[in-house]
Image (cartoon, rainbow, N blue to C red):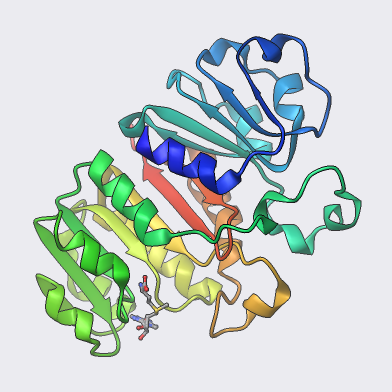
Length: 279
Ligand SMILES: C[S@@+](CC[C@H](N)C(=O)[O-])C[C@H]1O[C@@H](n2cnc3c(N)ncnc32)[C@H](O)[C@@H]1O
């Protein structure tokens, strides 16, 4: 529950729906969070009552991610955390949409004040997944490495620069991520969790994702940073660049083909999570 509770503190729900209310109130665009413990109550009407970026969290993990859900929503199935998380999504960030002008009843979720604490989310997920083999692509002086060092058996870091946190890695690979993946085919299906946080230009993020998908074990996690900036200023190359485009790429190439489930958490500067599901 720790992971779900943390996500709810980030959403800071202003208009939440749960329990018996579900049967009574399903007007369009009015709820930012719907909590359910029975997947059978999920229908189009209920999902339509979510605001832009609104969340439905089901603690009933039998919730099926079908074609309808995949079209308009991000859906991450996390049996390891006893939940399925669904987020309304039109494949762009809030500040770029026409909704920005018409959205008036609630504060947009992406603009609520709590910035995402990505090391905390990665730590909570790593605990739930009992992560033993962890890879971070782009380490700089990563607070994540400092935390993960205490809970994993093997910690690999990749960076084009030699930073102090390289000393904390079991093995530091001083090279581009492209070279790392090209030279290390022994890591196919190897890692329990991979954190992509290197070059944020979309072509680099796509390649890092494709390569990571090959190197993460089935049911393992790939996490990406800086995928949901709160304003245009953060599209600069030195911040998030255009890595927010990774969501539509993963949807068309992976999740729509049943290869993973996937969500972008819309809290600045954004964190995306994919769980590999090869049947
Ligand atoms: C945003 S920082 C990483 C921050 C860190 N992961 C954290 O959580 O605080 C990006 C890092 O990626 C490295 N980098 C940039 N392009 C890269 C590439 N193509 N391959 C590997 N590392 C790269 C940079 O040197 C920099 O240290």
